[in-house]
Length: 173
Image (tube, rainbow, N blue to C red):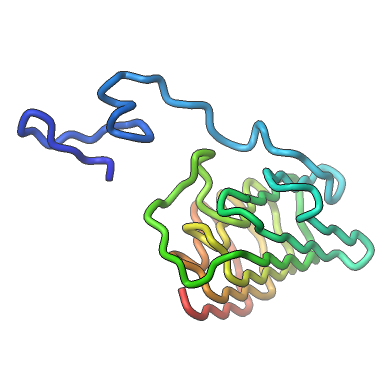
């Protein structure tokens, strides 16, 4: 909760925690700067903070399989264009609840697409353990299929994007 009562006044604090605000600790650096980077296509990359063995990329078949082994594992596509790929995220959720919207890197999605043109992609998420199973930010284009099964909060979230989605199926979020 970003609102707290201090001296009987309700205040909004802009830090990761109330203690950081009260102690005037500078905001921490966030984002994907420290993530590992794998080139998917010319100018398009998959950033991740997981072990490399949890990422399988088949460029011939245009498939990506992502295995979330820890709650902190995140996977982000960013680049020029992401076209005709099929992505599957296999998570670790066992009907758990989460009580946060963004992690320490300020990412909400287990699998995110950021600042990218997408065309005819398919995304499937099973048992993700993140606030958003799939999150698309500041991107545009077309998605053939989105399937989300068992996500503790939002199954699919899109912000600042213009997308045509042909089919979406969400169960148990």
